[in-house]
Image (cartoon, rainbow, N blue to C red):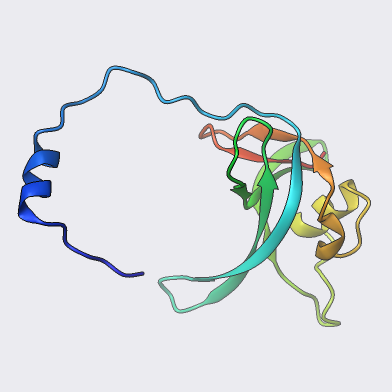
Length: 135
């Protein structure tokens, strides 16, 4: 990440900006198309690292793609929202009961690459952000 300081005149103009009165319109939970994916390396404060799957999706109400990195899954009789953490077992395969595996199974895919082009439903999580509905 890079950072750049803006000029003094522009900073003074921005400092005079007041608080708006209009609500920002959040995207609704709708069917999206998975256009691609990427894996982000997440570094934790304790020094550990994990890979997170990010699905790049086309939402019908937005021109630019959106990125989804969480899914709602069914574990037992309970719906849970979890990150799409990419973890492998001792054989180098995706963990059988991981959120990524359960999401893949829900959309009849065996590998992440098979998600491209699939249409998936979304829901809002507890914080109001869109997540993949995989149950």
